[in-house]
Length: 384
Ligand code: ZN
Image (tube, rainbow, N blue to C red; front, side, top):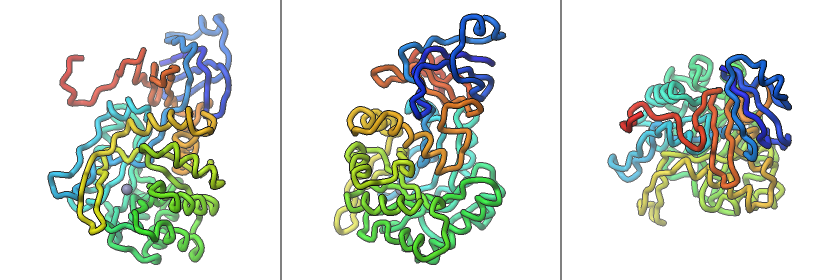
């Protein structure tokens, strides 16, 4: 299948100006100018006029509770699985699934099955092995073995630090899991990153700073999320990124302010990513640790906050897009993801001035056309 999308202004995420994009199968085959003569010679091709639209890489969401999470308020507060339509509507074409607080009634077996299901429904998926609490839950009995032997597993996470809901791991235990991940990554050619949930305890990121300062750990193997709980935490994340680690902000109402603070503190903008935490629980606890509220995170927040940042953070569109495309691809070592260039996977969004996706592609397959969603979850009951 050959698709030529003509006339969009391309942010790859760096600005490339108006370019035509030729998609062949699941990959981008060509990027540049095409004339009507070339177009006439393309066999069995579909030509889409994208004049006036902005082309950006499909977003990579590195932290999604694809089989749900939660349960902090009892069994009835276990959150639901994600629907592929919600992923596509949020402009996301690649997700990394993880377990949450509950790795007792939820397992990697379910996580991997759901990831494979989402891939059959059209998007690219990976998962983290390990769990919130240490010792890490795994499939094979070892974090390193899971990464080497199971295709979908690219690292471990989310592993909780500075968090009441964790089992309070020692620095030695953290060093052990990060090293297992790193070695598993080396042997399998994968990222081997460890994705850390940062809780609200005032120890904040100090366990990860100690890890990088006191142990022979490769800094990019450390990837910390939820770094926007307060200004002090953002400042510590700036320090961690300066050492070469990756840091991630969970999209929410304060994302624009958090991104601005990170930039103002001199944070390395090529080490920052955004994620949704979609379908995870957003529990609130009082000072005594009692649950006062529990809601479910929505992936659309990520999409909305990317455009809010592009419009109001003072950073360029290209810079903001890198937080959900090229930076994430680098953190997760996904060389065919997160960039519009020949040879890359054809994960593309064509967005209008209102930030509404007019055309979308995942692995070269149309997902949105003329603003209409083309992909439905398997059990969507509406007539097709
Ligand atoms: Zn978390």
